[in-house]
Image 1 (cartoon, rainbow, N blue to C red):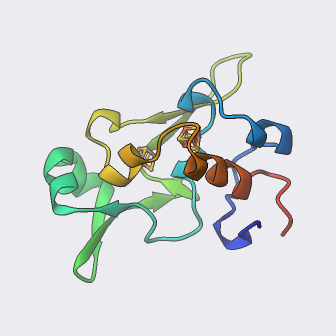
Image 2: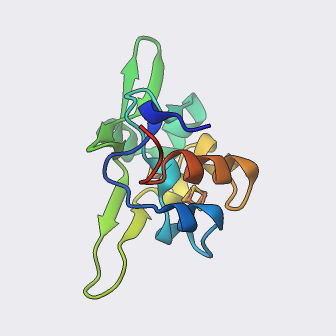
Length: 124
Ligand code: SF4
Ligand code: SF4
């Protein structure tokens, strides 16, 4: 079932594309999008691993930390638009990304749910 409040406004993932996992997350990025502010949890270990990037890209909300969000997606996501090719969804902290991102394996049921919920033709 679609979850409209989580649907991204600027991710052009069509229904047919959402059904089959891409061969590379660079072609997708769905799990990096959310309308919510407190979306990507950053644990203490995550904060340490992120190093200087934590100060720039994460923030505390109360006593919990999250990645900052920008334009409907994680602030660490860079959307590249190569000439004549589809956009690339590049995690600028990939090697140090939070555990919750590491745990979401491409092709897993959670990955499939992310793509399906955030497809561009998801019912509002
Ligand atoms: S893990 Fe799944 S939802 Fe996330 S970018 Fe990769 S293919 Fe897309
Ligand atoms: S840290 Fe990287 S993988 Fe995780 S949500 Fe942000 S851009 Fe996506």
